[in-house]
Figure 1 (tube, rainbow, N blue to C red):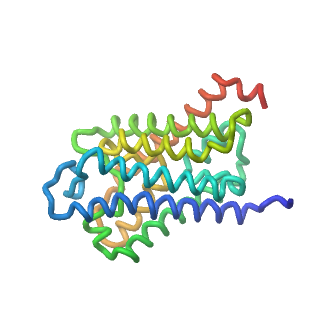
Figure 2 (cartoon, helix red, strand yellow):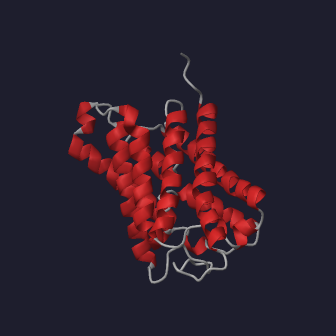
Length: 251
């Protein structure tokens, strides 16, 4: 079978990230639209709150299941990174060619923006004014530093799982999609009400840009949190797994 070229693999990353943002942040937007008019219970930055852990369970499972599906759809084509932090960590551990990092990340960012724009097309501007397009921002009393640490820890768990079930060829790869999807889900359930639980610079970039285009809340001052935290967490996890598992020696 001929090797799949970078154009098609990048397109797979674009479609996979589009699905992640449309379904995952779509669940967050729908949650906020359903809560419109109710008392603020969660302290969400745009003024309408989530109802509690049950809401984060639903949002987490939406993200987890769509990521699982995209891994099974595109894993054998592009690897289904759908996350610049994952791409960078794999490059840093010499598992991904340097020349393909930029095409992958650009594709992921475009897919994320298209996902957010599609939510506006489907739901109208209320997806922006009420739902904030699922944009992530630290919740009340969470400092900038605390938010970075939270995102780093949550992404550490994600990347550690990716290393263990997908990168390590000794693992039973058929369960990779489920394991990766579920670690994203539990990350969101626990850290959603702290930082919004992005774990992914592209997932935050799409809603931020679309909010800007349609007059929504400007969250760009928080964007470094969702770049530094996820990339730091993914890098640490990749190198820690390599050390613990002796993965480089096994390859």
